[in-house]
Length: 418
Ligand code: NIG
Ligand code: FE
Image: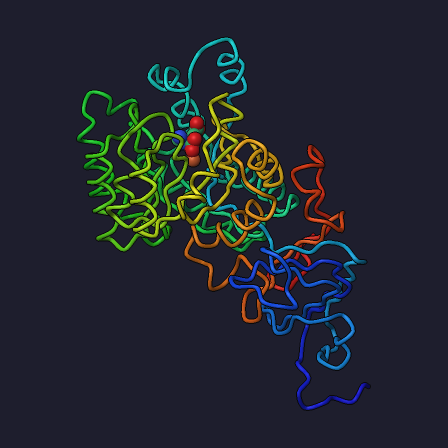
């Protein structure tokens, strides 16, 4: 046995030979390089799922004492990143809508389909008809794909139940999946669309959400989200729901200004939402309001790809000083992808982000959009040990070498998940 020096740290996980270990530290200082705080030839140790040491490869032997059954991973000079935090997914749903995707290519629009009782409502019908067990199986398959492409944390929304029993069914599925990996945050999105049976009385559905669904769902969800959009919930309805949610102790998110100037961005700022997502149609005043309210702006370029809309102008968001996150919006209608590498690949050329900005938005930014940034989103001592080892030595290959999975190994909570 190796002698234990008194300053040595006990660890049960050790990553060695990271050619470039991108810490995504908030204020990187030497020896960390560049905007992503890259440590060259680095190593990292963890204990009980938390990072206890990060340092130079040639200091491992002096700094770290491994417990008997410790896990070791050799990065073989590859790139290492914090796990992606995909802060916006509609993980739980039944069926798919490939038919609508192809109809839209022939001219139908997303809003028209919803107005016809299709779109989101097609998936509501399928999800209501599905058993919790089947929903859990398909969601688990999606989680595995998210993990394989580098996401170690996902947010997961309900929103295809749209009645008390089916919203709770979906949130219970999310609760059952919370053992991960990846780790999950849970959002109640009962205000995703007006269900067909309430079409003639929208106010009654808003009351159902406020009086029954949100109180019953509270133990199962951290966040409440509303689709604030013409064709879904207007700004006044959204405010009623979100204020009720806030009183019940939910943290707030909004699908805001995706298809037009819905007032959602203004509302997100007024209510100090944790994040406002989509934001395809925003003004300078909206950007300023979101910034001063500290709302994280979430870029979802998978929607622009799928719906063939203009891409959101991430460059302007950053230039306006907004804190941004980048997420998949995994759902069967507007963005059917589990792959964070794909949305990074869209955000760089089409939303005007640099590689470093996109990777930061996909890690630390996502953690901020879930208010989990003291725990995850960067590789720093004290944080959870969630990381990915890549099939490249250079982060600039991400978003450039596309359509293939460049993630080789995934670690969640200091345990090798893949
Ligand atoms: O984020 N826009 C509203 N909700 C989802 C789409 C859901 C669906 O089409 O099934 C979104 O784009
Ligand atoms: Fe969404």
